[in-house]
Image 1: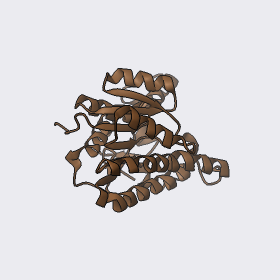
Image 2 (image 1 turned 60 degrees about the horizontal axis):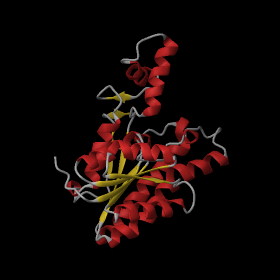
Image 3 (image 1 turned 90 degrees about the vertical axis):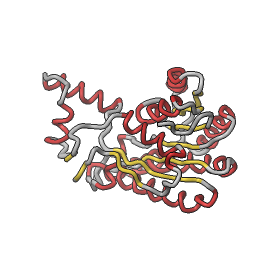
Length: 263
């Protein structure tokens, strides 16, 4: 499918790996110009190089006040404008805590990582999208918004905030031609889950094939209709679609991509 993104400029915050890099790959394959953003300059450069001449690296930490404005400005300058932004960050491990363990410091760190990183990036990008005559915003929620799991209290609470924030952006800036949607992934086998699969296999002395799938059902008690974790590429396809005009009448949506997970 031609996404109709040729020569259009996009910024992927968290685009140096996982779902973000997968989304950038789809966009670049269809001729878009993409800025991949991350905290580490070396990883950002490596990611951009892997994508080819249509990609540029930008570096910054949207969890820190003022950094998102600088990062977005650098992307706009490098790309010559902005048609859309996706934010795929906000998964800090500290946010996966129980009430009794979640100190004020953990809540504060989770607030910046899970919620405010998205708020800052979108706030910096929206004026450029409006000036462009419209554009797209895609944020990242989580399947855990429907899980109410006590081990992930700050994470789930603040991901709800991301969804509410995204819907409000869709409402406020729709008249200016800006669409905003929130993607809620389930268990996706990005780098951390790939490492976990290997660690589990080594610790238990078994082959890695099928092991993570077994653990998801028997130990994590995840009832996944497709009986497997998703891949970054599968989520990247969805991000790219939502950023494109193929989703031109889709805004304010919370889109689950969790393999049919029930709780």
